Length: 176
Image (cartoon, rainbow, N blue to C red; front, side):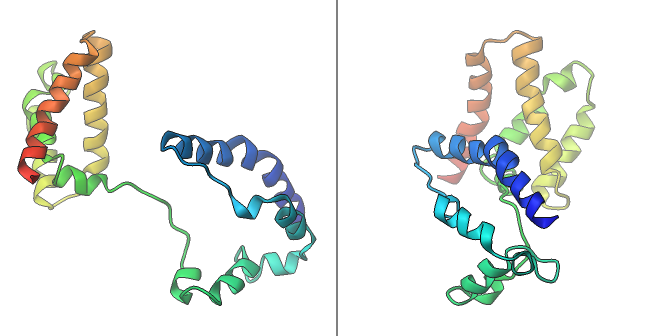
């Protein structure tokens, strides 16, 4: 079963999902990516490794971890998997704090009565003070605000960029 699942993953998820994402992100930054573990001889070798060595004690990549443990600190090799996230919460408290204040002052959603001014102001204040982490809500509000201005108000992109730049210029000035 494990071999069939790995084969299916290799033939579908890798080329249709994971590799295109890596390729697009690398190209966006002018990088050429060569995944060494996908070199054909490595893949062919991995296919010959017995299943009981690939999955041991419910943990994947058993052999890879054993080899890596010879060269890297154990706490790095055997730690739980973790995703790559952006420090949006930090950015919204620091560099982008003026943008949040600008959002609280001049939100079209508030002006249209869709959101309550006090609620938006409370989210911003609680986040900036560090009492609560509202980064997901605030990030969505910023993006909704941009969408609203462009698509519902038909504001020129330049005008929205100006509105954003107002907050970002304030942000740059407060950090430099």
